[in-house]
Amino acid sequence: MRLLFILLLVLASAGGGAGSAWFLRPGSEVMEVGNAAEDPQDLEHYSYVELQNQFVVPLTEGDTVTGLVAVSLAIEGKKGEEQTILHAEPRLRDAFLRVLFEHARADGFQGDFTNDTSMAELRSRLSAAALDNLGQIVSGVLITSVTRQDF
Image 1 (cartoon, rainbow, N blue to C red):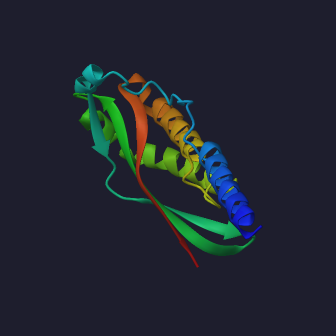
Image 2: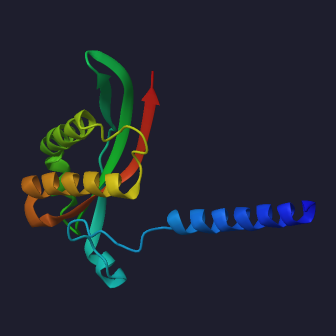
């Protein structure tokens, strides 16, 4: 009887582990954000401009600041347009801050905020803001770092 119990326990554990692995497997769906370069040969036509300072976004509950999120961004654009992107940085920072504040108000930085879906949505909205400001010289916005500090 004891051996049967141990065997059932091992089988249940193996089944639970297999079920967990199947449930937590990476998604096969690939979300396309903007029209970022997908073909490795196309990468030679793009350059990356790292924005100088981090974006700091307060997290609030009611009237209380409960934490901060610091986000670093880079812009993927057409090669040769780096100066155009740098000259537009104040306008871009304003547009990106609006997107980040809206994301924070919608609790986008709560819980598992770095999951693929949440980050793809944020990347897409940031890319749309960059396209609105710079047009087709921008192919996407990259989130190079994101850190949350709770108080």
